Image (cartoon, rainbow, N blue to C red; front, side):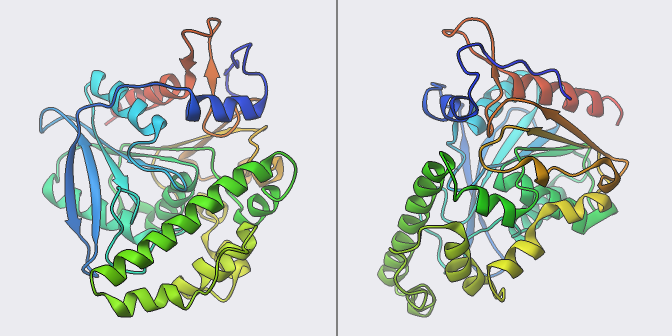
Length: 329
């Protein structure tokens, strides 16, 4: 168990989850946006927060319906800049504020765009020390990619936070209790995302891509992730159904193949999942370090004694891990 102690005014897992997402006020670091054209002639927007060309570079991956503007991404970019790191945040397709140019979206197991970004940056900077940090969906994506690549990636460290290791169990968990409120909000945003993407594709005249989204049908009556992933993700990406998508995309099965020093941070009380999704020691490669906390919620981990000066423990813990492994290079 890790040594996280929750703030006394945020003992509840839902408060831990909601407080940093809704209440954290952070000035945006100075960003430089770059657009990368993907092999399928679409685009990815990446947001840089950097000074100097020779400093280590950290790639940041956001969660479902997030972006480079998510508070945890901005918090890490601001902190790591002070610690002499450069950072670049990947906005998954359609998450940068502008719909992308194809029906293709993103999902928990979609690793091609991450690999494209890594290859692009590695070709530019063959001698730079790289690391990757992923949150929630981005954490699952990161771990799956690390397992797929094995020794073929050159990173000094990786970190995944609040990971939905077993997607089917997490989808079911969101169908019960207070967690249904998270599900409702996320599904609402995803439906808007698809609607806006369809309108954009029609507007720019990419009718064959717009037709792929139109064929998905009416999404308004979807009320669970099982339904959404069967009707949207499975159909867009060629999975047989939601079961097939979850089985092939869950990161837990890839942990044994990871060959990069990797830290996993997971709260037992995470309202997006159950304790049963957390892997046991026999499932981890020697490079993987799992740290669990009894409390912390989902991408929360807020500590401190003063409600007016909360401490974001994640940033402290991950900074220590990065510094320790950077020193081993």
